Amino acid sequence: MTASPSPSLAQSLHFWARNAANESALLRTSLRLGLFDALPVQGSSTPCSVEALATATGTSARGLRALLELLVCLGYVSQDDSRRFALTQGAAAFLRDSAFLQRLEAEQEWGGPVALLDEAVKHGEPVQHAGRRWDVLGHLRALFLEASAPASSTEAEDFFDRFARSGARTQVLITSGRLGLLELLASAPRTLPELGAATYLSTGGLRVVVEVLEKLGLATREGEAFGLSAEARRLLDGKALAYMVRSLSVSAQYTEALERLDETVREERFILDLKDPEVSRRFYADNSNQITAVFASHFQLSRKAATTLSKAHPLEGAAVLDIGTGSGVWGAAFARATPTTHVTYFDQAVVLEQVRANLERLQVADRARFWPGDLFTHDFGEAAFDVIILPQVLNVLRPESLPGLFARVARALKPDGVLLIAEYVLNERRDGPLDHLYFGLRRFMTNEGDLLSASEYARLLEVVGLSSSVCIPLPTQEMIFAARPGVNLPTRLAD
Ligand SMILES: C[S@@+](CC[C@H](N)C(=O)[O-])C[C@H]1O[C@@H](n2cnc3c(N)ncnc32)[C@H](O)[C@@H]1O
Image (cartoon, rainbow, N blue to C red; front, side, top):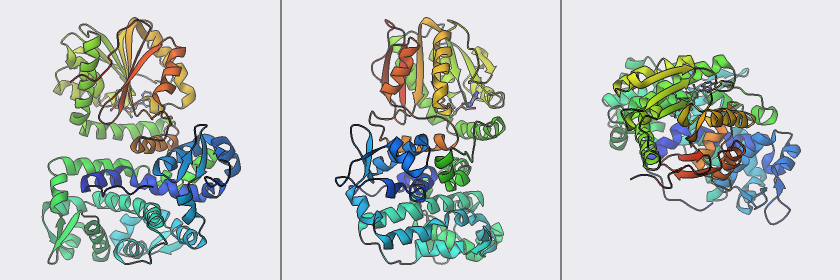
């Protein structure tokens, strides 16, 4: 738990929009499940395996592992070379302190009510939750705007901040985006009555939300009027605000599942179950909209990947298959790599409907084939493709489905074909990077896959005859190229 430099507003905003609610859910769930009690303290007793801890807490080992790997990354838990875990002495100092635990327990019950912030802001009154009324606005005021008695150490206070305020920050952003407040603040400074008149929201509710936004550095006050701060205006310029509001709506889809994460880790009961075809269709149709919004930045990555592969493996006339294409951004980059590449875009039918427009914009629709199907069972054929891409799709599959998919993919590759996996690949100790681990927690939570390390992928690929593989980092994710022995693979990212 070393002190890190203060993050910039850009980094904070990214974290609040994407991972902060996961952070609170991780710590709240670990407390609820008794994990901190079950962990031995480092140096005083023998560390425990995931399985032993799962037995002690009556939880699923897979779910518990997702929590533990994050707790290691955050520095609250240590992991030895045999993958046995213990609570660090620093964390034990406050997590064994009964006064601090009482403060956490009192905070624990606010998760559900805070998720009803929209309603509180609309009416300016306490909300009804689980048979009681909860003063959510008062609670946010106490958390963010009023002085509270600090914990016994900076580390304890930092833990409390992550436990209590991280998720609330995400919720304030979600509510501000959903109720149109961020757009209003961006358009011109307004007083609270003006904001109230424009939104029909309560002045009391608006006051708390804009003052919290001010505290977060997103809003400023000039006299009686509130507007976006200069730095927030710079960050949320042009399309960036609309993109952030849309990404917040994706984050909002996880709210209930995060609040009930303990049920999922205990019983593998999935609150947002993306293995349910109807839920998956709705979720990914929205998600591919969102991916379409960031097409340009993803396209930079996929183009880099296509250039990298083309240096080792000419792509002229190549037949390419993009499995789980989403917006089509990966296949399109390969279509643009040469005028003769043909790309097959495979996904659920509802998702493919949105791909054509992107391909037309890039003028590659004439070399496109759309192939709707279910990736869990689809037969991709035999020796049919020079390149198969699995971009951000393996994390959709539960671990037991990977061998079957890899077998179907290996069969569909020509003898000198190349498989390209673009994924969040974990480090070999599986305790980082942090962003990847949060993404992995969400995949567990939605009954989807596990993230793996490069050597874990290599072992699975070897079984289906793809025995040579390399892992090359891109700016936000990693690429694994795999092929049969003797096929030339890139060794580094193209300039
Ligand atoms: C995380 S998105 C990745 C999208 C895209 N490849 C990218 O990198 O932006 C996963 C994709 O897998 C697709 N998918 C999920 N389950 C599927 C299934 N059973 N059959 C076909 N496609 C599926 C989703 O529709 C979604 O487009």
